[in-house]
Structure formats: structure tokens, C-alpha cells
Length: 402
Ligand SMILES: Cc1cc2nc3c(=O)[nH]c(=O)nc-3n(C[C@H](O)[C@H](O)[C@H](O)COP(=O)(O)OP(=O)(O)OC[C@H]3O[C@@H](n4cnc5c(N)ncnc54)[C@H](O)[C@@H]3O)c2cc1C
Image (cartoon, rainbow, N blue to C red):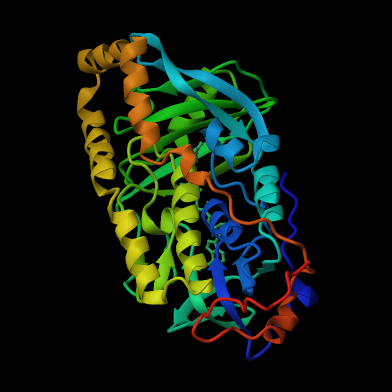
């Protein structure tokens, strides 16, 4: 069972009434931590908040392209690496060779490793409730910030528009169980017996299996299919976790706020791969924020550039969405033919190279400058480092912080 480290009771003190930071990053999972990492050693006051402690709540099956994990120096979190996918339909099984590898990883370790690279950013557990202008409201009080990032997941809590409500919103649903067990393959099931519009999976992670079912249709429940799949592979249905998964891009900026990861719909339709895009767009967002902090751009330019960057991926997301919509109709001979076709190395290599290029691992480079550590900022001291108005470059005469 996950250990709860979230601050409770007396520890959950109020923030200072005039709490202010340069950058407030709401959400400390893949997207939020990727943004914070880009801001290390920027000289800015950066506060990351999440309702849970960092790494406390696993949000996915935690499989991502190995090269992304290596390029972000997260390889110590890797549990198992795979060079192919084993894909099942009711009538056939094919092995799809990959031109790159996928790895399953330990969520808690990955988050810790990312956080260790975030320099002197501060972290506080707080539930984010909303925003008025540049003031974010939390259950521990308000925090004002010059730059605000919503990396809070599909609810997009800091958006100006009314929030998404499943099952009417463009969301898929996913549920998985995490029994003890071992496996040699990343396995996928395209089988109407589990779900028509969607797929089932089993991702081994050394001594644990992550077995689940995702439905592209938010009205189709996936608990029974998950139980059936677990039973079919003789695994215990224990340790459930699930969530809604966005499958349409949403504006990456709105009302002066930067949205990253699931909050911007940065999760690839069809595969529901959201970790790599969260890291990719998190890096891109962090670089735009850094340009502001360094005095190389103003806030308006950063918002514009980040919005354009996100929107420039619209076509790729639209293709993936079209593929997602066709799955429901393909079951039977067409699906068998496709699965067999992808069993040919030339086809799978071609397709998966293009797929990786949507958010390529090379985007992790160059890494942001290395932090020269100083003590982490505490919540009750948020006002001791005033936010810089106008976001001028840190003074050239300011001594390097160690
Ligand atoms: C069952 C399942 C399996 C999946 N498997 C994979 C996979 O193997 N590979 C893959 O690439 N993708 C997978 N995904 C998709 C992936 O999990 C998401 O796309 C990814 O987690 C998005 O990252 P994020 O940082 O944007 O959001 P999240 O990971 O959802 O993080 C949001 C953060 O915000 C915090 N938060 C939310 N609301 C509040 C609030 N009000 N106040 C404070 N904090 C708040 C949360 O605690 C969380 O830490 C899976 C999804 C599901 C549901």
C-alpha cells in the first residue's frame, strides 16, 4: 500500500497571507516536475504544490520510451525494458518489433529523481481550488505568482472555462490492477470481449504486473473488463487505480495561465500515452518560463510561443484521434490483418519511428543549467523572497548561488 506522506492536521499550516512567488506550478507529477526542472538555477522563487506528496499517488501503468527516461537522468527508476509489443486479438497473436524500447518504471522513484533535479524549488502539499487573476486559491490559503502553470491533470482546475465533466467530455477511462507477478512481454489485447473502443494491457514491472483496460468511450465502464482480463491471465485483481484520460488537445494557454500535460490534453489519443507528452510539453513550457525569468522574453511572448508550440502538434494528435475512432469498427478480419501487418518489422519500425517523433526524446536536451544548491524555501517564508515584478534578468552582478 502506498504510504501517505501528505501533510495533515497541525502540519497543514496556512501560507503567509501575502505569499508570493515568481512561478507557481500546480501539480507535481510528470508535467509539473518537468516544468520545475527547467527552472532550476534560474534565481527565481519557484513553488510546486500538489494535494499529495511528490510520488505518493501513482497515476498510470508507468511505461514510457526508455530514451526519454535516460535523457532526463531517470534511468534508476526503470524496472523492466521491452523491445517489442505482444498484441492479441481473439484469433491471432503477433509480435510487433519496436525500433526503440519501452520501459516500465517505479513512479515514486521517478518523481524523486525528477524532484532532485529541480534545484531550490519549494514544494508544499495543498489542494488547489481555483484562481482569481494571478492569485491561486488553495486549502492552505492564497498564493500569488507572476507565472502560473496548471499541471493538475484532466480537470484543468485553473482554466477560465467551465471544467470538463465526464462522461460528456472527450475523455477515455482507464482502470488497472497491480498484482505481484512477473512477465517477459508488454502485452496488448484488441478484443471486443474486454472492450470494443479501446484495449487491454499487461505491463510487467519486475515483480509486479500492471493489468488494465482502457475505453475510449467514457460511457463504457471498465471495472468488469479489468477483472475479466486479470482472471484470464491468472492474476489477482488487487491494488486498483484508475483515472480519466483526455484524448483531445485543449488550448495550452488561457487567461495568462500555462497548461501542461493532461490539463492541455497532451495525451496521445489511441495509445493513451501521456507521460512522454507531459514531459515533452513540460520541458517546452519550462523553457518559455525561463526565457521570461532570464529577461529574454516578456510574459505575453512566452504565452504566445508556448501556445503555438502546442498547437503545432495538432495534426499528429488529429491522426491519432482518427485511428482511435476507427478501432471500434475494425474488430474482426480487418483487425487481424492490421495486427499481422504490424508484425512485419519494416511496417512496425516505420510506424513507431513516426510515432516517437511526435514527442522525440532528443527534446530533453540541452538540460537546464545545473543547480548550485541552496536550502529549499519553506511555505512560511514564501514572502522572504519577493517576486520580481517585470521579470527582469537576475542581476549580472548577483553572485552565483551555492
Ligand atoms: C490506468 C491508466 C494507465 C496509464 N498508463 C500509462 C502508461 O503506461 N504510459 C503513459 O505514457 N501514460 C499512461 N497513462 C496516462 C498518464 O497517466 C497521464 O497522461 C499522465 O499521468 C499525465 O501526467 P500529468 O502530469 O499531466 O497529470 P497527472 O499525472 O494526472 O498529475 C496531476 C497531478 O496533479 C495533482 N492534482 C490534481 N488535482 C489537484 C488539486 N485540486 N490540487 C492539488 N493537486 C492536484 C495530482 O495529485 C497529480 O499529482 C495512463 C492513465 C491511466 C488512467
